[in-house]
Amino acid sequence: MNPSLLMNVGLQHYLVLAAVLFCIGLYGVITSRNLIRVLMSIEFILNAANINFVAFSHFATPDPMAGQIFAIFIMTIAAAEAGVALAIVLAIYKHFQSVDIDRIHLMKG
Image 1 (cartoon, rainbow, N blue to C red):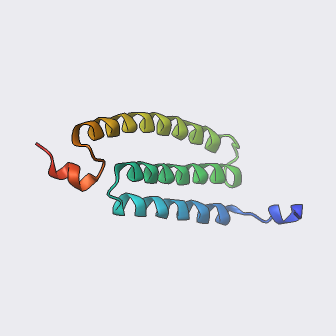
Image 2: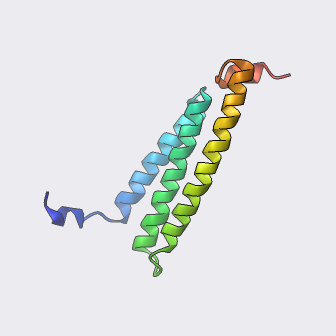
């Protein structure tokens, strides 16, 4: 592979990638009825934010580590969120025998 091709990747390429990831995540959150898919879609949205932080840090700020620090912080929060959310999903599945959002909503009370 020609190394000069890698030098042509600019900020707009990262922003397009992040926008695509965000749109996929948003579509998954809006349309999915499965709780696990919703959690995965939220992770897509958080990864899109991480890409934006790192890209803007690299291309736009004088401090090259600011975006990476925010991205590590978001990954830490996302890992904690995933652990808590999966524990809640397991408890819901144990109680309702389903992770379908519509069925859980109807079974309230």
